[in-house]
Image: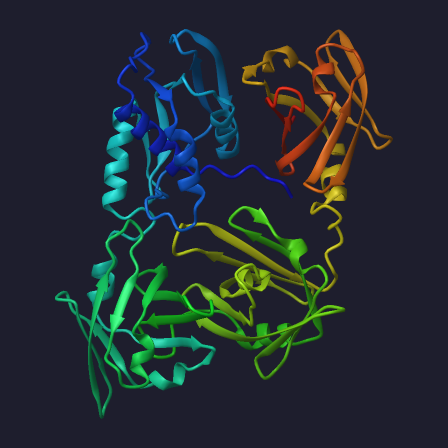
Length: 500
């Protein structure tokens, strides 16, 4: 599915920070509730940096509370429009639609949610910059008290995976990490000395060195921190050579302290075959990469994914952690673009039964969230990569209104105030207000880019503006976001329907 790149709040904050610092002719607008800043050449670079999964400067510990209102100005700082955005996608759409040399101002006050869940009011760009500084000093999505967590008490290796499950190599060893960056692994008959350190970045990696003797030399890596609480530390390392993934988990007790019936889950997993019904990788739907494969999880902890012309072998393991049941997958991969690399991870099991297994993984690097579902039947909507039946049923369920319509940067939402839209099963659509009814046609189709919504209201104003083949950005049961890039001047239009 062709989705707009999701704008994280880090990009938004960095835009304000950089433009405020680098634009000398930027002057505050008279309204005391706004700060005007330039949209300059820094914008494109900031967006690219933000969408780069290897970016260590992203800020993921603050979330905006929507909706937000922006004032838009031309190069002479004369106001040309106002736009309200309701989510990250709409914010990105707005920023991408603005030309260099224009200015924007956010209407204050706004609310933001901090990493600890606290909601605070922000009254100016300066306060936003302060929040950036405080957030960055705490490492973004990285727990600010990680060193205290690590150096308090002792830890045990409850899971270690390096091509195979090698957890037993560390059985009986109790690990302690001191504040002077030394470490020890102690058993009844042996003591192994080591060191630990954190890399200097907003999302630090944890480095271990326990010498060159097996098996502790296996721990001598630069580990991504997936999860860190008082009870569990989950780590992951991706090899720079073959791209294989290693997993290391520490917990407070040798056998772990988690909950969940691993035996029941394993029995379910190894019973018959499964198909990937969803893989959403940091907002990108990649389900169709696996539509041709049938997955068989074997009792000996091997797994095969078989299509008509290919077989991919892998290994699976089920563990118990403080968050519940984990499913660790590790498939053989070939090349940097192998889709099975996206399956290789330590997945939290959110729910399961005889028909479906739902998994989730939160990245330790950029804080992105991935979703993986296995079902008993193949995924059936891969002509272009979208579920036409689902979106069709959503649109036919109830009435809708135009929450936002941006025509090449101009907010024309008010033209549709008071209209209720009804999408009918026969392919007709009606827009009605207290004294007028406008009829048209609609359909949901699959294209090479994903889902499209095709609208045609003929010459009836103002709905003739909607006559187009709209790309679907995203949709839920109550909201459908669309965009269209003009084939003429290359302008971009954005249309959002909200359920009444």
